[in-house]
Amino acid sequence: MLDALKVVTTVVVGVMVGVEFSVAFVINPILNGLPEDSGVLGRAHGGRMLGALMPVWYITSLALSAIWAVAGWHRHGAGLVVIAAALLILSVIMSLLLLVPINNRGKTWTPENRPEDWKEQMNRWDRFHYVRVAVIVAAFALLAAALA
Image (cartoon, rainbow, N blue to C red; front, side, top):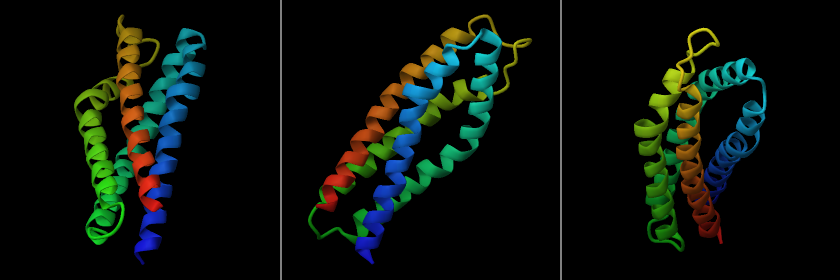
């Protein structure tokens, strides 16, 4: 049972990392290259869609990692799983304090109501997101290492 939990946790976290990595390095650069109205509309739609999905994914990833850490406490790799879970906690805190407030504003923007500094706000979100991606990549790497 523990082996199944390890694999499921690693896959769930790994797919989450893939989604967030693609947002940072594929989707947002594409949206940034579109004419302004298309870019703001694309980011608003992405903010609504992923803003609804990702909190569940982050909490599920954290919960699975915590369960793995407890269930495998006296086994090889437990320390790596605890550190990975701590990094996932950090990613949730970063999300709540830094990214969600910007996302909540941005998901309502249209070409008619966007603030003058909308690009600066999106650039700030992107910078915070790059750091969050690094944190969750590190958590994923630790989980993968704990499998061995």
